[in-house]
Image 1 (tube, one colour):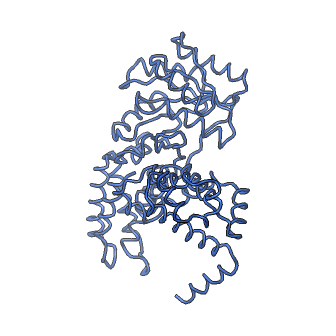
Image 2 (spheres, rainbow, N blue to C red):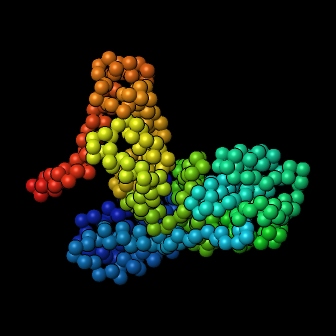
Image 3 (tube, rainbow, N blue to C red):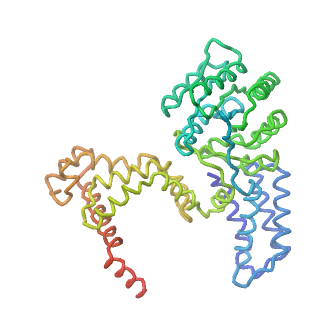
Amino acid sequence: MFENLSDRLERSFKILKGEGKISEINVAETLKDVRRALLDADVNYKTAKQFTETVKEKALGQNVLTAVKPEQMMVKIVHDELAALMGGTAIDIDIKGSPAVILMSGLQGSGKTTFSGKLAKMLKSKRGKNPLLVAGDVYRPAAIEQLKVLGEQIEVPVYSEESNKNPVEIAQNAIKYARQHGNDLVIVDTAGRLAVDEQMMNEITAIKKAVNPQEILFVVDSMTGQDAVNTAKEFNDRLNFNGVVLTKLDGDTRGGAALSIRSVVDKPIKFVGTGEKLDAIDVFHPERMADRILGMGDIVSLVEKAQEQYDEEEARRLQKKIAKNQFDFNDFISQINQIKKMGNLKDLASMIPGVGKAIKDLDIDDDAFKGIEAIIHSMTPKERTNPEILNGSRRQRIAKGSGTNVQEVNKLIKQFDETRKMMRLMTSKDGKQQMMRNMRRR
């Protein structure tokens, strides 16, 4: 995510490295490079120009403290301006109403249908809503079928009328259906086109007028760069939408859409899609995104993802087992499953400050735990509960059953033993005191 832009900005700041103070000359040189980096990332030209002018004005107006290096000060100013450029603060979605109606808009292929499913799942699980998905794309039978499949996966009902080719009527009938069946949220998936055309605009304008949605979201493929911003402007001129959804932000995107769209259409980015899985959806936080663009990680989002999978009762049970040195392979694989539920592993690792750059060239996929899981699943229930009985012959059998070798099995068991010792040390009173003594010695 934004790897090229991050690298280019980092190189720009190095111009100030070793400088004793901020001056008009070194600032101009730095910002020339920053503007070039933004343009290469497909940021709108006017936006990039205004951005660098604002940064220059603020940089030259700073009285740099002796404790703060010019390079650090410039990073801080650019960070704050990036966050402001993307909206400053997160803007919530309006789901008040009986039922609340969300109208999805965008071009064909932008990811509207998939995102409708993701949003329904998120609002159902995190906000306690009872959503109804509406198949309003009457031109593509595959879109109706796709929405039904998504609805089945997330256990959300889908309203469709295959024989009706009037999307306005379908949307109106869906709202009546929602009221009759206790659905307090209606998400209307509409038809897209390969390009903006009059028929498309008239149709979605008619749906808007008929159902009076609380929220109109414009879904845009972030990989289309500046074209996405131009399309957003055309849709906004006709629909006056409430917010933007950026999909495919995990792909090979240069970031231009995310950085330009707010300044061009003056509408907030509300959500981002970060993968193909149905839980790969995040609320858009401008400050956190600025952190990630500048290689500072995103610890807050990482903690939030962990909290979503956090079970207090399970944590207490686990703590007792660790204290008694009873942590076993069943617990170990349970923790792996919790991590996997949090999302894409490389994306999670990049949220840790300093890690993103270190792993950018590494291929970390969701099968990273596959070998470990195979080894553990090849153990008997008794072996998983009592790791100390894993002798040589048992290890050979496990290696054969998991398609690995004895060395890999030994390595996992050794890592498990070390993890168990460390966890016990960290939870025991004596262990904490010992760790404190060690830290004082350093």
